[in-house]
Length: 331
Picture 1 (cartoon, rainbow, N blue to C red):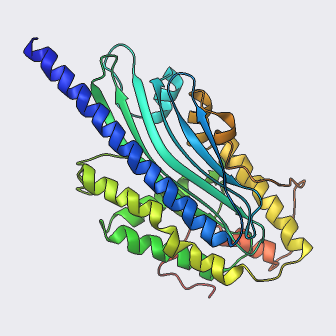
Picture 2 (cartoon, rainbow, N blue to C red):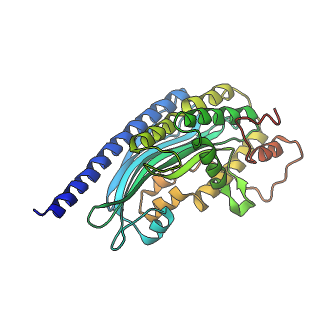
Picture 3 (cartoon, rainbow, N blue to C red):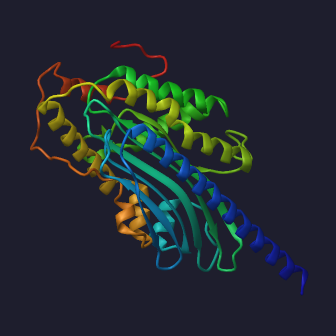
């Protein structure tokens, strides 16, 4: 066996070991999140569905449709691999093979919960790990991504402050530039550009291509993974207090109708702009899992108009990006 062949074999084994480790890590986070939202719902149960992807890998979908607090809650994990189509490679922005075919490995956990009450916001969270290799199994790129964002249907300013305050504190434990950088990215990403740049919600944090050794944050692989782990666990501080203080508030038909209209805007973003949805559809992932984020009910009104200072108008105004950690305007 030549020295070059020995090095290639070792590199391929290292890639396989890391994939096995991060797959177990994601499975552990999936279990934690399922337990957390099962407790937070106070009565609903998750149904599990395992699936395999033609071409390599598969996943586990857990969906609650009989919840007490949540009208629908989906928490999915996957570990998929295969040849990367050219269009998907361009969208990913990773460093693929210099020549020949690029192969991918991706594992992650993603959740979206749609509460019954319009007084309780929808929340989305995902964390993921990507690898690109050449046709010989040599690693060409790897990175972490993820984030979490809040989509309210009623203009409770304190809820946005609670959410962002928890994210700010969590990010600062790792590097004080993470929150401002990733908040800005989130504000710019979760936007329906086809609706005059209307924000989907009040944001949160969003990041991609977080690589070990990036000069901006100085995180090695273990430190980057530790940060992403904290992102996956932050909803205990960021979301649970909001659910607990809003779950028993009453609501009327107008508030429920507006919730369904805003859910329609949520659907528009996910189907038109969301990178994860596009990646899943382009790589032959399971459609039910890719579209898990969609609400059970939504509504589209023709050119709705809201009276000044109505709760609907105040909610739309609340979606404008702002510094939720220090801003007290409107309190």
